[in-house]
Structure formats: structure tokens, C-alpha cells
Image (cartoon, rainbow, N blue to C red; front, top):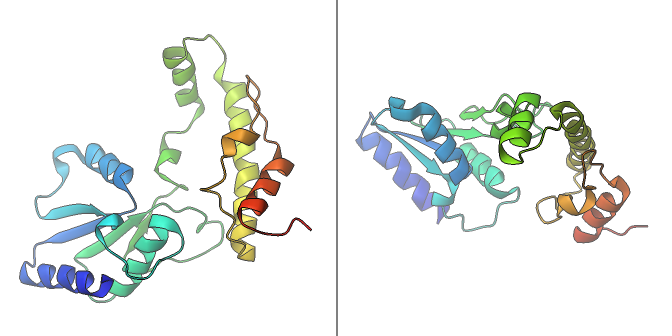
Length: 198
């Protein structure tokens, strides 16, 4: 099915040389880009999610994996179809995406707004507290670095640990100084990934 759909996209851009398609991972990415551009999106450009493509054979790596697979199939056939994806861990692992894939400068789009000031705004305006943002921000950074190390290890070793299917929140303590129970989290990842703890 995917080949027929891809051929249809390629035929469409050949028939209308001004037509452009930009594929993104998901609806949140699409909405964010359209909001960011406002009225600046050219009328010949269509921003689509990779969900619009029906893959006959399952592709690993979620929507990002599907997007990269689609990009590989189309690469070299047209410049009218491009792709925008989260960098994820490609930057840390020195992985080069296909030439028609543009990556975020940071791990993901959320990385652009994650900073101490934003945490302070959430604390003050949403949670109505007078807590300082720096300790919470530093605790979050510490947790993120540990989780990133586990994710990079999984990627390097090809473990395919099920991060999406393992609830990280269960392993983070509550309060003003949250901490990650790293051992319990790794154990849960392994069990969910059906990897022997021995």
C-alpha cells in the first residue's frame, strides 16, 4: 500500500510543479509549525503527518521511524516532498538522516521552550506558588540526563527498550526536589521489553 500512496504523492507533485509537501511526525508537530508560521505558510505547501501514509509492513520506531522510512523511499526522486523530524538522539550518536529530512536543533520541539524561565512561569501562573524555579529546573535536568543516558545505551546496544510503554512518572519522586529511581526504572524497562533481568 505504501508504494501506491508514495507514487500518488510523486505523481501529484509532477502534475503540479508548484505543489510542495512537508511531512512531520505527528499532529502536535503539525499544529506547532502552522502556529509558528501563522499566515506565512505558502499556499502551495501542505503540511501532513506521516499518519497519512499507510504502511503495509509495520515499521519500528513509531512515527519518527515511519517518517524516516518514507523519506528513504522518496529520497532522490523529488525535492517537492520534504520531511521534518525531532533530532532525538541522532546528534549524540552521529547518525545522518536522509538528505530530505530536516531535524530540530534540539532533541525535540519541546526543547525550544524548556528553560528555567518557562518553569518559573508554570510555578507562578499555573500552580500559584512562590517557589524558586532553579532547584526544580536543575532536578528536571538531572533526571533528563539519566534517562537520556539509558536511551542512548539502548540505542547503541540495539536493545529497543520500550520507553513509550513504560510510565516514567511512576519512578520519579514527588515534591520540590524530584529524583529518579533509576534502578527500578531500568528494571521496568527490561521487564516490559521482555529482557531477562539476569
